[in-house]
Length: 112
Length: 116
Image 1 (cartoon, helix red, strand yellow):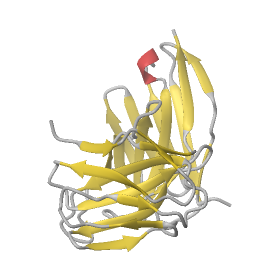
Image 2: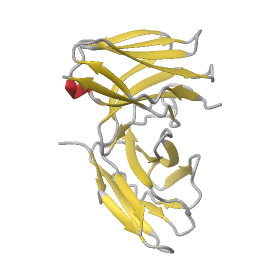
Image 3: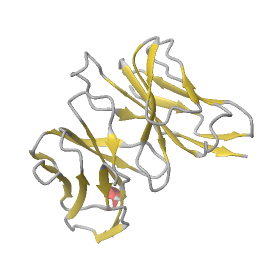
């Protein structure tokens, strides 16, 4: 079993829809959680990072962490065609740990 | 503009050949990392360096080597011992003020390595 599981998709939704992207993990020691967005043939771009459980909002993006369920989510409101990309979750044992464990990524397409 | 520059964008390797991938950053970051990305797999850590003249192996270091002679530069050599080198290679960097003070990692735009 992988330490971090992420549905690879592909996921296609119409423009304006709310998108929910999720990761589950097995190591309860993970405390630091990140979401990256990766466009084709580009490097991952950091979208959001959170520490421990709770919610964090930034514009159209909301990150949620539920440590009791070992489950993290990224919500995208009012989705735009420019949101079409692969979304990677990543996590680490403690704040500042150099070793990030990544999910495999979910490929998202927003249909105009 | 500050950022991480990886070159070349595409690289081809012949059998038995060593190739070196360049990674330069002007963000004044202390820590630098090399990852490999394969289809259907998450990013896997090859090597990382928290400070000049020091580096550590990641999860898949076999067949790779690195150096860190300057803060700004962290080149990766893919040696002939790496039997399956075809992949997308990503360099990242982050601030590091101690074991518990790293900031999130930021990535370059990668080098795609293929075998001739």
